[in-house]
Image (cartoon, rainbow, N blue to C red; front, top):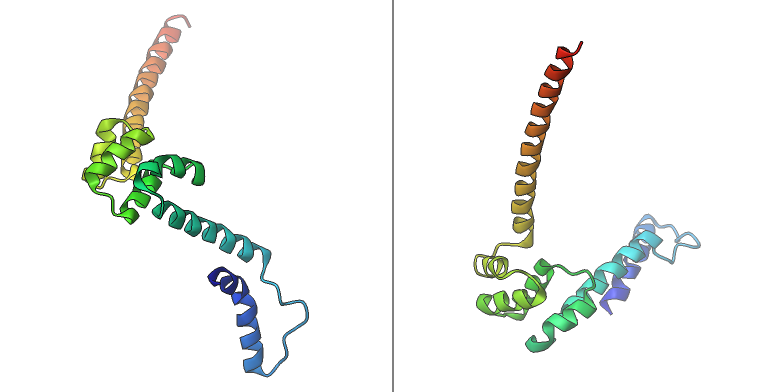
Length: 152
């Protein structure tokens, strides 16, 4: 299968390079590096999950998504729904069922706004609030310094 082929790829590449140089393959190099194996298994697990979710009936998608993709975000669910060919209007209602507020769900589904955009907007709002707090803190520090100078 494809996963096995990917797992053997580094070994096959080493064997091919050795054969081209006319050398025999060194002993013990018939196993792929552990880090590579871990990465291939992780990525194939994601692909398998996507395939399972794509084949899931639409009415069961949210429940199966929560079980199969633990920690999956609304963007991940929207990606699966797009792969399934679900209409944007239906995606909005499903995103609401998933737990997004209606405005965000409709905005994300109809305008194709990703959760990254939504996070960016919220991050900007937090930055604006932090800037205001920072300004207030600076004002307090100046007033405190003035107050302290009156007593010294």
